[in-house]
Length: 407
Ligand SMILES: [Zn+2]
Image (cartoon, rainbow, N blue to C red; front, side, top):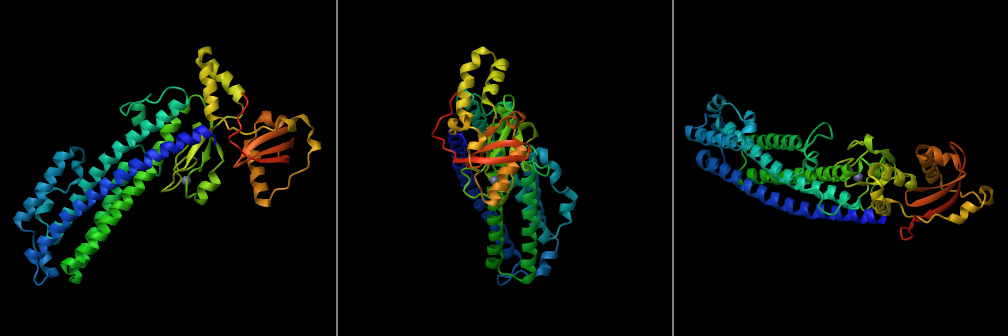
């Protein structure tokens, strides 16, 4: 990966992880606070309907008292007032009058989970908008447009936050699904606990475990994975006009999963990118990125200048500096004839990998040349091209980013 681009992607990832941490902390605190609200409600049930710290299950099947109905109604009205867009999610009034005591408490849990979903959504949206702006600006800066080209409020930045990308789900939908699932679990725990005759301490400690743990896990995973999506997409957006191909990069990703490892160094068309399939994230907790691929930078520069005008020649040079792979082209090799070189024998697996990369990624121009150098993974391989599908490896060097490419 180009040194400049790697540095910039690393900085972006670092920014993301710092902000994710503080968002996670904020949400954790909020979940704790919400749980103690539920805890109090359950404690009140034990006081009201219990005897010797146990509630007889049968008493929970009696009708919900009017005062509790009133409280529940207030909660529902409050939610509808705050989030009118989601009014359709609350139970109809008539159904509240028919609830028994257990169901009353369960409805209360559902309403609380709805509120938590809204809060999660607000917080995550704000974070992702900032991340999108930061990411798009990273690319704009690399293209020579300064550090603050886009603001958080620019439509282009907001375009890919909360858009469906995997299973056709946006993150708002994911949050809703997660909280509904959690509400169902909590309600089952609650009913089973009462049926077993659990004490207040036993019941609430089990609920607390589920409530806090699941809320945190769901939120952290979503924030991380959506963050990767927004980072990749917002970083790519400014490149779509001037570039055609990208390569998946797992560089800097501490835990490279088998999927991403296989994907890394594969070259795709920018126009064909699809998050989750050939563009990050590939799986939950994925933090892969990409780098721009250009086979022929000289031709790219001509095209760029033709598109943007002669006055952009300097800009095009700095873009090349920022994106081209810097590897030592062993110029001497090209002065000799292929038969002057011995064949380099690679381990079977590496050989198969290199061959498949060559078959998929060599351009028509490269196939016409006798000797071609190609970066694959961490190495640059020099190959004698005999014909398509028939290559002889005559050089292999570790990519050394310290050696500059001659422009
Ligand atoms: Zn990954």
